[in-house]
Length: 264
Image (tube, rainbow, N blue to C red; front, side, top):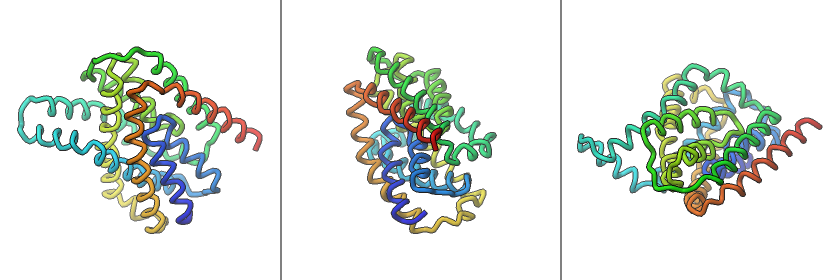
């Protein structure tokens, strides 16, 4: 992988992390088109670096929310900020358990299996279509909702299942307000990504990679900039209830991916 490839993949990641079209699925499609033959562990490492960039863009976009949460936590009271943080922790449990006990199996999925990605994109399309038909409410995310949304996030580890699409759709289908669902979806992934990076640092996985620093840096920078734009745009899209457009896109992308992989 060279610097140009890293920039392209960074832009793909930044745009698709927040848009409900599966960033991991599009990264696998991008790698296949660019002829990336990285071993699964290295491919997953680069994916983690790009996700770290979009996590940072999330913090920047929701900086006021993040500041209020930290301020509330340090008051050591049973306030709204503490309750929201507890919901974030609950949502992290399913994905954390999956990542902890099935890491090797997950890595094998990030190896250019385009047919699998295609079918998962179709699943994402179905989720988005169902969510778009749901009525909007003023209901906030409850504790039980947070855990169920966390299960959706764990399933979305699979390439082709949109994390934002799965979590927002699940939240909306549970009867939650669409804007609150999007806010929760974007904030819940930040500690999970940071935890994954911390684990890789402690295990020495990041240091073992043969990927050059310049490739990682360019990928991070382009992903961060694209993520800032996509995150802001996605908030507006969710408010206007236009998820059906992305459902159509994911369905077409899934069919095309399966067809191209099958005939090649």
